[in-house]
Image 1 (cartoon, rainbow, N blue to C red):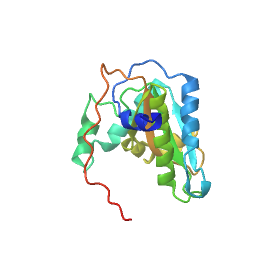
Image 2: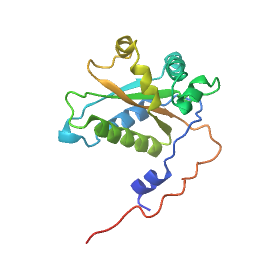
Image 3: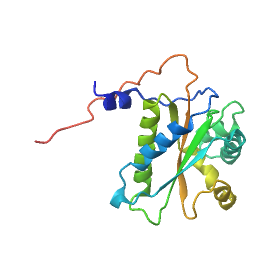
Amino acid sequence: MNPVIENIKKRRSVRRYSQTQVEAEKIEQIIEAGSFAPSGHNDQPWHFTVIQNKDLIDKINLETKALIKDSEDPTFRKMGQSERLHLLYNAPTVIVISGDPVNSYSMEEDLGAATQNMLLAAHSLGLSTCWIGLVTVYFEGEKKDEILKEMEIPAGFVPQYVITLGYSNLTRDLEAPKRRENIVNYIK
């Protein structure tokens, strides 16, 4: 099978990590893969923040849970109230993908493409990932400006996605869920 297609088909979201830290060279390759994603008008509206500070990762988890524990959404409320759940799965590395909405033709799509490139690059390097959207509420609260400054996210950029990154702590590979059928039609 084509190695790119095989990589796409075998990548899974992992939520259990060893505490072995990811090597700098691998992170650089993953960031580079993200920066080579397509973007509308070639705007390249992204900024990547790599967090390897366990205290900060734990703080993001706890403060995000505090923000969602009283959510009207029952799933979010349950997650926020769970003492056992770590929203970043205790990953040793977390990457925040931020975008510039002012200088972007299609920021969410562009950042989604960059994120997918990074997930696939990580898998090809023997690393595991999980794409997290919920944690971005942490960057939207009343402490928003303080948080963005602390994390050195450029002025005007908006955190959109988060990736957990590390070596899997699973004892077996995850199976791909069954794919939906009847998803294509051809017009010739």
